[in-house]
Length: 321
Image 1 (tube, helix red, strand yellow):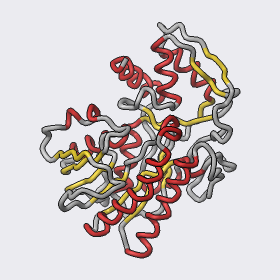
Image 2 (cartoon, one colour):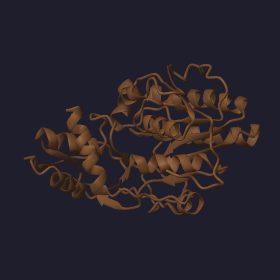
Image 3 (cartoon, one colour):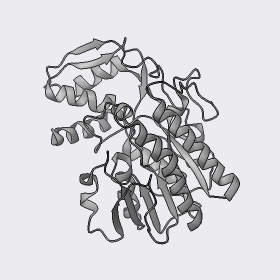
Image 4 (tube, one colour):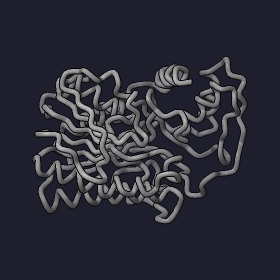
């Protein structure tokens, strides 16, 4: 990717959650741009395999550490990307306290470090802050419709708290901080068992199992390929914007139609589609970003088609299986 001339470049980038799905792609891209990169991850949901090929690369350093407890000494840096957090539906039930801690204590610790270093700080927020939205598509100005005691509340409310903390540091201490709200993203290095629809459907089809569609399948999601997302994050980090920006693909799919799409792309699979009752009553029924800000401020919009991205993702899952 090539940034516009007025966008900032960084010499040392710190990525919390750097061994995760998105974090590892960020580490790789910043190294390509010539920055030194320090990845911090406690490997609860991240995997060293995601960054193994970066070991030995000039300027790359990995620190296994839990930032909920403290921030390790990483030396001088000029950009902090806070991407540490279990973020999949299966994690909400298994690790609710860890999620709450990393988005509260971990956010405080990383913001303290960025403020002291006078570094740019970008929080990885999420479309989940909109909850089960009553506005469609969702603009950044929408305050959301979130169930504070629902099955997803540990993640939804933790991210809303992290946003409030990020804003408070900027207003009180002058921290150069902002945030991106990430919508459904897919691609290589996703965990096959993370409970999200892309790995679920791909894994089931490749194993010859039934594709499980919960509810009537009319709920919608939009899918952004990981390289497009990383491009948007890097563009945002290179600006002085402080307001949240949606990053995602505005093209919307019904889950039932997406299941058919996956089967068409794995023609050797003999899987069928199986309907099951909804697992969580507060699952969002519609999810699609308004990306007007990203287009205007960053010159960004997704470029990888779903057909192209899914083919690459399926090939990755084949190697995992």
